[in-house]
Image (tube, rainbow, N blue to C red):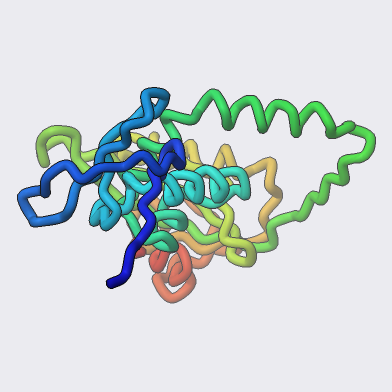
Length: 209
């Protein structure tokens, strides 16, 4: 006969008794420690988001600047579980980040500024409650780094589209590649802009992803 020592995953007490089974037949356990915050637990918990070790891993990955989707893919759990765990620990994360920022001195921080050489432009759309009310998002992305340089959101009208070139003027781009929409060919200088779908493959790939 093999005996397995069962300890509470919350308070690590060994004062454990069985407490029936779930609808799926999984054995429930009850912690008899009066100081335990949870009491009931499952050794074989199919909902990984409820496991304390997973919650600790979520917070550790948050402190190392891992995104919600990255954390959900690595663990693996749903992105909603990651968001809920982070939301419950917002105060703890804020205190850690604030303490870290206090240790940084502006004179010791090195800022690396790189000028974008060429940009890609494209738009994508969605609807607000009804397909008769579409909204469009135009944005420009640096072709080398993939970072968004500027974006405009609104209806698919030329006056909305023309605000994007104004936002890109401080970047001093020598050349960019918009899509083949009519406003791009009518209002942009053909010597500085190449309207072609072959030149917007990176930003189109990001939209599909």
